[in-house]
Image (cartoon, helix red, strand yellow):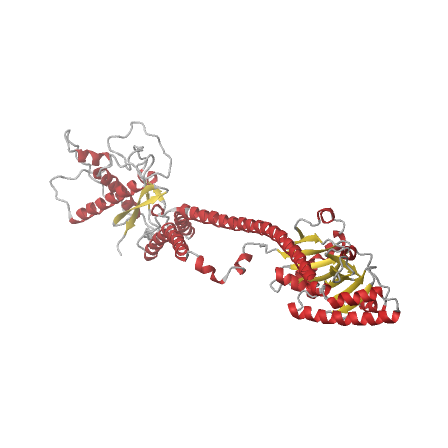
Length: 580
């Protein structure tokens, strides 16, 4: 099973490589995603910052019709120069009407996109001369209710704000104010009367930075924004394509952001992770509002494992896959695995099944392990040993190789390079015994296994059998005799009479021995054993000797010889044959 195991090892290595490659790709993807998010957050923060500056610039432009309106300038001048309180009240009313008319005209001109929520006219002494709500409604969360009291308080002034002071000096300014719990974008312009070179006052426009404003800003910049001041969240908004839940991720960071060195000195922080999958950049807004700014939030699209990528694949992903190539690779791998399994599993299993079927039908007495490979050979050896043990346990006759020394007496030591003893080549002084387990005539006493299926010999009579008639001694051989006669004499068999023709039974036996001889040679070659010097004459002489010994011992009619392999060596097995 070496090839199959190598194939499994190869498949395991490929699978391990594929899994490792998938995790490496996941790591690279997360790394690229983190780098992309950092770059995108920096770009988003700049985009929002520029959008706020552009919005402030346009709000300054939206105040131009109010600052240049002659009615507003005239009524503002009348209020400043009036000394009678009654006349001041009347002029304030006229100024309010002028602000209403101009504000409505400005609102209709640009659709109210950049119109302020509140417009105030400030005199030279920074006192508020007129007040008008343009878009916002007081008491509904957009504007603080105390703004209504400005109109009833003639002494309310804005002289403490630099934007107002600059506007009274003739400059246009934008600023960020925090009034109570509200942030306002402020735009101021000077009011210059006709024929005058010095501003007679200033026009101040306030735009509340509330949720509506931030949502519109987030939609135009396609970001998620949280506006804060003094460590407190003021408003927030997210684009429709973004997750609103990510806005709450920065709440824990707002309390400590005022102590961040980058935020205080550099006006912005580097993109940083505030949660495992959420990053943010904090930007400080310039203006009168203390420690006010905004945070741009972006959720990272990280992969926790390679399988998570499958759920994120697009619908047209299959169109970009080389389906034929992948199918061909899978088919080749499958066919190679089946081929290796067929060679190392199916073929040996079929051989074992055929031998088992022959054993079941009685065509053979044991399995042939030499024709099997690997674990099947070991299994065949174990089965043969089990059959032998069962037979011996039940009192049957074992089919293990029989020791011919016990049958025929001491057998000369044979040449280890031949399967049987070569007559005339035996050493003069042979050892009394040799190592067991060899084939007949192969370095030890010849052993011929007896079939396990051989029926037991007939019971002997109680009375002693009559002695067989004595054999006649063969005539002494002449000095010059044929080589075959010498070989027959060497193994203890009478040489055939040349004048007598062989009988039919002898011819059949010789033909059967010739078949066994060819099978034995073939088996020795399969077992990589040498066959030099093993002639049929020597082979037949040895078979004849064993046949006669078994026939006299078991009182059988004939002996059938079969060839098999055991422990990688060719073996012969003799089975007595009796009449049915």
